[in-house]
Image (cartoon, rainbow, N blue to C red; front, side, top):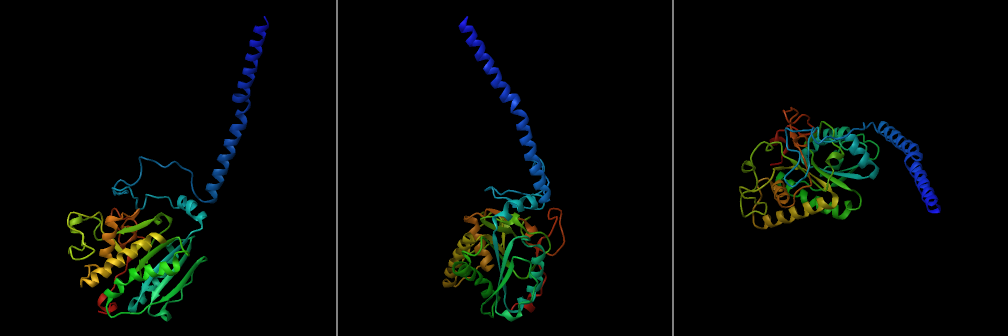
Length: 331
């Protein structure tokens, strides 16, 4: 009899415990979920970012959005700007940009900087570094908050090839002596270009390359790689991934340092051997990325020519501007 009473008491205690866990705590659990949902909703409203579930079944199906080595390829319709800003803005990063305006190319600087102020990395700390032989000719441009411009004096040249060949060495030295502890990411861009659309956090990665507008629909045997084995930029037929434009090199500062240092060394070896790659530093850049795959690719939206669109290039964000090279190049 006494044993039955003990069993009854234990059963009763068990029922009470179950009731407390599954009934007594449930209202508090629901209340906590409701509070979290309200906070998330308020946060999304403050950030102007809608709450939604990304789909595995929808998105761009007309273009390549990931490389064979699983690096993302950035196109319109493949990223959410507001979501990325909520990730990167709290990191308080600094983005450096280098641009070379030498000789008559200084005439492109005003449009370049003004358009960058309208579209490039808005809401982030940006520091422009203008390499020029004419510091006095750098135009006055109104910069946004947390955006600065520094002029870096360099000599001119009678050969445009020498100017472009020297960029890798100058960027390498600048990173090593000044920039390594002053910025997180760096973008090295051509001055004879202009921004026409949003360029933001979707372009950040360890190493970033831009697919050249002239070759994104062509086979690799049509790419204008350096084909002479005597050059350090040599890529034989049958090899290669994409053709990358030399007008844009980007990534973490320490990674871009590796890119520029390696290419500078190859350029020096070529010079000793009296050979100049067909497209100077662009040829060496393509060789580097063949064996050191970029971690992110920018579609031709980010390196276009002209302002017209195509079926796959739905927006032009950054484009080379038309110029009469005979009037702006020194040779």
